[in-house]
Length: 232
Ligand SMILES: Nc1ncnc2c1ncn2[C@@H]1O[C@H](COP(=O)(O)OP(=O)(O)OP(=O)(O)O)[C@@H](O)[C@H]1O
Ligand SMILES: [Mg+2]
Image 1: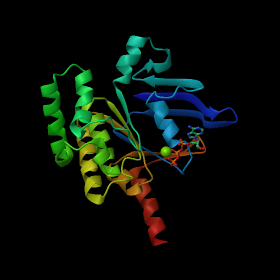
Image 2: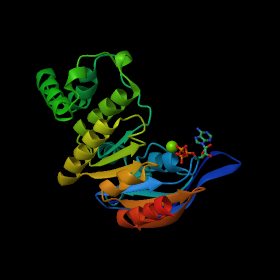
Image 3: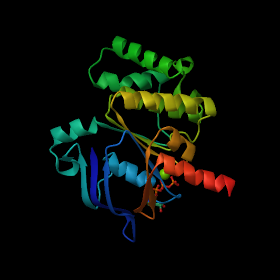
């Protein structure tokens, strides 16, 4: 479980971006929604322990991350992976990007490459395995970053607007992949504006507005609301 206790965060002195967030995340899929500038990306980076709160605590599986010793911090970091909306890939091919998390975990090059190619194949993007990072479209780069996140074995997969550049076919593939991860017991946390995507993943939906949690509902409630909008 990830728990946030009274978390405050600001980028500049004059404006709090997160204002006393209390949140427990233990669902298979949790979706964060809210208007542009509401604080979704900031919240995901706090959850991923990339930003330190000005005030408050972040507990990962019961351990207070920012008070943990460096050994515990390292093992907690390995449980968390954050995928940026416009991910930065390392210089080199797609497969070298995807095998990287395995190399730092001690895999041989041969095994790492084999596993990376298998994953790209399962994701239906093996045709780009040997392309250079500069030869990828925005959607392809997002999928490669997603592959790199999955292969890391992290328990918590945190995705910022993962479908913004994906066509329908690749969205479907991503949904299948996310469902597989849930079956493996991994927890997914996603910021998205896409209500249908949230519904299909049977997610718990949390809304944030101006740095505060404003509402929470199930994906079924979300679709009823969507119906009302479409048919009103
Ligand atoms: N690096 C930064 N420096 C200063 N202010 C920032 C920075 N990043 C974000 N902000 C501000 O913090 C607030 C929350 O931004 P955040 O990126 O978390 O919103 P968001 O909900 O992810 O929005 P979007 O839907 O557009 O992605 C906004 O007012 C934004 O202008
Ligand atoms: Mg954002």
